[in-house]
Picture 1: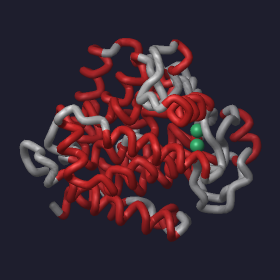
Picture 2 (picture 1 turned 180 degrees about the vertical axis):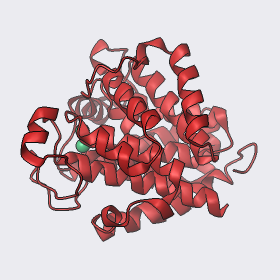
Picture 3 (picture 1 turned 60 degrees about the horizontal axis):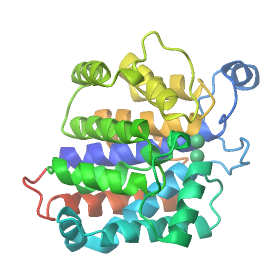
Length: 309
Ligand code: MN
Ligand code: MN
């Protein structure tokens, strides 16, 4: 249990580190980053959002909104969700609305469109839309994973429910489930070699995400995002090397950084996250993440899951 807690905390804190580090260079090209920073490797804020040092963006705050909705509902809401009841999905939708109304520093177009649709129509998903292939549903799914360890079916149905509130696209679905499964594997103690093997097989089964040769595109299109994340995650064993390489690829660097931070953080555990990055995160974010990690793991062990983690 202690090892699982360390890995789960590593994932959630690693996610926030990647968000805060990458946001500085979001939407920049690698050449522009090199010109301005050499190699970008410190959490300094700034960027197009003019962030304070250590501030995180929508990736982390939307994940926290999802985590809070799951914790508010507790074991009973998850149990009912497993039985097909959509009360929990509605609460998650309301949490996204509340998040949206809190004037977050940024909000992706597809997320905004989905949240407004839920607000005005109350529907839990829109029709399939070729324009919904962004990474917004994928980026915030970490709390669904932590809340459903040990129950594959519940993990998949909760992930899809939260994702479809804003994104209805087969590649968004596949990416959300794929990186979710990979996170579960790493939380279970898989090492770098096991991670590489799993990724190689997953890419064979999901050839849209094939990333060799790596094309160097790191946009918010979910295919580019996943290719970048898997490329650097499998290339570098260490958290810091993987993270620095990822964010210096630029473009949607806060989101690719957050996702690499999540996966590499689960792989190495919170105790091995670079101290200088961890200490730069805002204390309220670290506290919220820590509280949620304990709470979500506790949910995982209850809510009728088939085996405790
Ligand atoms: Mn962001
Ligand atoms: Mn982003």
